[in-house]
Length: 374
Ligand SMILES: *[C@@H]1O[C@H](CO)[C@@H](O)[C@H](O)[C@H]1NC(C)=O
Ligand SMILES: *[C@@H]1O[C@H](CO)[C@@H](O)[C@H](O)[C@H]1NC(C)=O
Ligand SMILES: *[C@@H]1O[C@H](CO)[C@@H](O)[C@H](O)[C@H]1NC(C)=O
Ligand SMILES: *[C@@H]1O[C@H](CO)[C@@H](O)[C@H](O)[C@H]1NC(C)=O
Ligand SMILES: *[C@@H]1O[C@H](CO)[C@@H](O)[C@H](O)[C@H]1NC(C)=O
Ligand SMILES: *[C@@H]1O[C@H](CO)[C@@H](O)[C@H](O)[C@H]1NC(C)=O
Image (cartoon, rainbow, N blue to C red; front, side, top):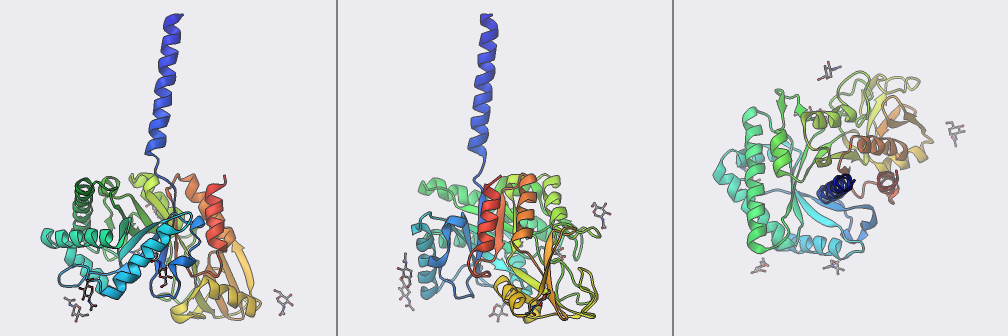
């Protein structure tokens, strides 16, 4: 009897310490947004109750030395950015994101990552910049490695970066900087050659990855309308559900996968105003530069043109149309569906691209509440 009680007791203790261990190991939810530096939107305007992390987009190192050369006015602005976000109630963490789209940035990062010497210069400069300006972490957005060799360079970069961050934290007795990467929606990228991100390197070295679950369709194919951030696509693998599942199935810790949500729409001009479904014939882009509208502009368009708004359950996305103008985007309903999907996969959270693309905080609030309320 006593023995039985003993083993039951032991069992409970083991169970208890197991769940405490799990609790301690569970990273906090990520409710993030990129902060586009090119828009006039002040960090003091961020509703920090809706976010945990804000990514300043973007910083780019010198293309020859690979060091960050921040002029005095930018340094002042960035120190103000981090201090403002830290001083708010509640406070949020501030990271800066390195890179962004465009061939020049892509080739710069590829050259930087191609040798250990240049990687080390870059890493040291990034860490120094983060500490000098009060950032909590660093993100890299390399769109995208194009060869097996570049993938391996990225792997080496992650590993050496993590080592340097650990060493700096120990030497200065501070919390280590966060290290994250913006990555393709899928663990396998298809172009120009099939490549896979290194799952092991991500699990070991990054706090998480931001999966860019958008831009599946756009002005590069104007022949048919498309849901550019479709959760589901019955006809292809270019969808958020496929992409996120691919990361998890490849073995990345689900808590280290963070789902991207676009706060912008992509537009087309319909060939025939009476054919207005997803996949209907189109003849070009619709309203907005390069066929892109921020969510604020989408809402303005819908109102001014008395557009018809449709939530499409097959793709988990929303579109609107008026006359020959057609817009695919995410609204509160599709965002809610996606958040429930991401939670069901056990992901670490979500990020928005980008803060200030909506007027008010409707979608940011919807996402935050949908994540927090079961
Ligand atoms: C680096 O940037 C400068 C200034 O933008 C440009 O003129 C030069 O061609 C670039 N060098 C390389 C190697 O890309
Ligand atoms: C920038 O700041 C540094 C140190 O704060 C100072 O020495 C330098 O003169 C400043 N440069 C300019 C152009 O104001
Ligand atoms: C940031 O800059 C704004 C505008 O110049 C200023 O009002 C604010 O006090 C600054 N905040 C911090 C924390 O430096
Ligand atoms: C990354 O994802 C996009 C879809 O958002 C896809 O069109 C593109 O081909 C992918 N990039 C690569 C390099 O495969
Ligand atoms: C989607 O991906 C799966 C698994 O990689 C593959 O078997 C299937 O053929 C793909 N489907 C399409 C429509 O490309
Ligand atoms: C707006 O569209 C609806 C149908 O979608 C129509 O019933 C209504 O009369 C329209 N209103 C205006 C002001 O055009």
